[in-house]
Amino acid sequence: MEYVSEDHPLQDGDEVALIPPVSGGAL
Image (cartoon, rainbow, N blue to C red):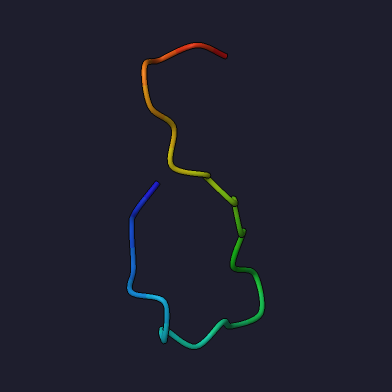
């Protein structure tokens, strides 16, 4: 997995994972 900036254009084959900012570490 790699992190890219918000304005990085999506390309065919890209997988998008939405990772919300969490505090504390509780799932």
